[in-house]
Length: 430
Image 1 (spheres, rainbow, N blue to C red):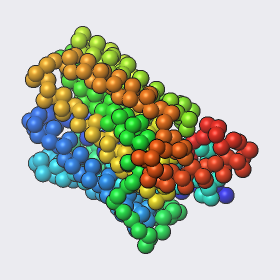
Image 2: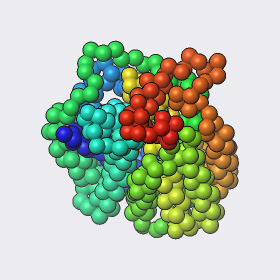
Image 3: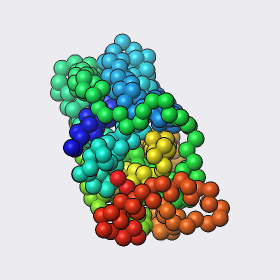
């Protein structure tokens, strides 16, 4: 019988994603209405990354050791606690710093542990009807929709609702409490007592270094440019609609990312890195549009650039997950997922880096430089697109990594043989 446990876990990921991005469109409110300086607001964003990156590198091992359910429960509770702290933001900056730090931890759990748990619950025997790659798409979609709706609802409530610094967080708390009531009933896929380790040998695999690594920082780098940089470069054209426009860009970016994810799954194939390359081409196109938007300071062109960059994000996050799910052994999947998302969040620092560099050059010049860097990364990925595929023969220098993928590869081949397909045919990770 088909299990629906994955849906509850995806709902918990959705809540963590909602909590992670509800703060983003409110930056203008904290700067203008609450009177915090630009430096302080940037520090609020930095507190989120400080909590997120170390957690991404450790929570996978914790879930291997103690099980997926208790760690995901703790992450969801942390998301609820973070909103409670942020709702106290009118009393001073300390609750906001603490809330953003705890938010980062909660999102890290959702990304590393939630994505892995949803993937495992989307495989037989838990969900025998799910097709190849379904788990990766479900996990990515849950986070993306959470990111988008969290930002959208928070921005609307802050712009037009009462208690703008409190009400957005109360809504998130109510949603999260509902999910926490049913999350303990979900099927555990990783029993406690097994060894959990921080080391993830799969990161040394040539395909991870040459295909996943050049793309990963652009996952959130693209969305950062879309809804953090674009509102700044057209801000003088918005008047009193700055908060609403910032919310619109965030929702459109992540909405495009959510809508395009089924396409990403169909683009993916194990014989090359086609989906990753398509994401990078879309990334370069979106960045080129952002150059034009910054040059003429057009809100409409900035919106178009955000939609293209959001589409690139959607393809990139799914294709990257599918690549690492083929590379990782079952006992490394949570850890490698955490490493992947940690690398992806390096791109979240891109807006801050551009803000510093803007004292030396204008945004059109800086964004043009990003176009060139993205194209260079695309070339690196294209060159290695058909190399070091999971289960293929590796050169002597990589022989030690062959065992990393043999379990996944062999099980995939056996499954495809049972279905009457050739093992050499295009296949995808579940």
